[in-house]
Amino acid sequence: MKAFLEESQKYLIGNYARFPVSFVKGEGVYLYDTEGKRYIDMLAGIAVNTLGHSDPQLAEALCRQASTLIHTSNLFHIQPQIEVAKILVENSCLDKVFFCNSGAEANETAIKLVRKYFYDKGQPEKFEIITFTGGFHGRTIGSLTATAQPKYHEGFKPLLQGIRYAEFNNTNSLKKAITENTAAVMFEFIQGEGGVNPINQDFLNEIKKIADEKGLLIVVDEVQTGIGRTGKLFAYQHYSICPDIVTLAKGLGGGVPVGAVLAKEEIAKSFTPGTHGSTFGGNYLAMTASKVVLSRVLQKGFLESVSRRGKYLMEKLEKIGLKPRGKGLMVGVPLPPEQNATEIAKKALENGLIVGTAGGNTLRFVPPLIITQKQIDEAVEILTEVV
Image (cartoon, rainbow, N blue to C red; front, side, top):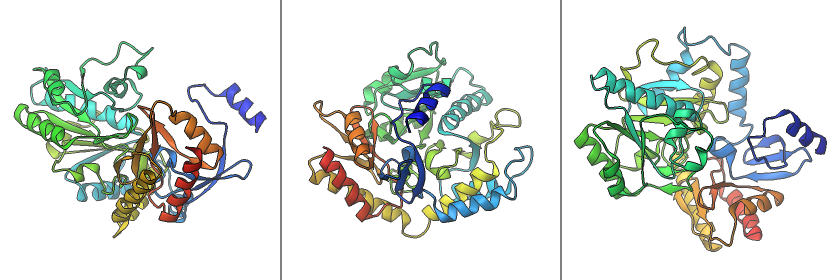
């Protein structure tokens, strides 16, 4: 293992603060490292492994597709891409889908689509997008700018023009940020990297009211909250709202890289041939994986199970003196200053439990959506010993 780590440091760019562990096998909610040690995974690749690890149905579908066809490019029609788009549209309030490869790409696409839409309407002066403190939208230059967290901006200025910031869940701050150039408001229903912070219903109502009054688009980043994570296919379905644009990634492919942008028909029309694209977006493997994931998540009782398991997890965490927040199986636990989330995550790893961290000294639990009550008990028992 020591030689392995030395080679990692020698050959890889050091932009990740990696734990000194490497996994070689996964089964359901469990991972196994190079030494054969078993871990219960409450992170799921950061809300990615929707169906857990090495799901037989997903693995078989990918193997079958890989032996048939992997890539042709979007110069041609890709049948599974059409099938996945149909599922997403028929189970949402939106009309059209564009596929890419990641959440950052999806959010970058959304930024472009907002600008192109208003340009086509003869309002090129409307190009500004308001995002919120604590939000996270990616690391490409546009999505990085949309991420209203200064720590991510250091060393990368000047950033993209036309992104303005307001305080999350603060109506007055939002109103002050709006100008004659404002085109859209972009936000997460539950801020993931920001510390698993849910949106306030009154604040959401105000966003909707202002958008209607001023003709602004509502862009929702569901990269982490989408595909069943909160107990519904889309987090927006918990609220009385239909966004104009929704971005997806993470859990959609169950571990295979994929991103998607859903938009209302009128807005989607602005992406005419040549205005945007992605070489690998919506390729056969990604769409095969997405189709399997969606078929399982939309099975009768699956989403209800996610809600039940999420409620159970939060109840268990409360019993050991923690104060969880979130929805479904997207749960955050803010810690007091005397406890360090990163140090607790390290100790948990040593004891066979994988948990994540997020902003504001928060522990993050985003396990595979197939996790059972017994496995939650196992995870919380380890966490209890660590805390």
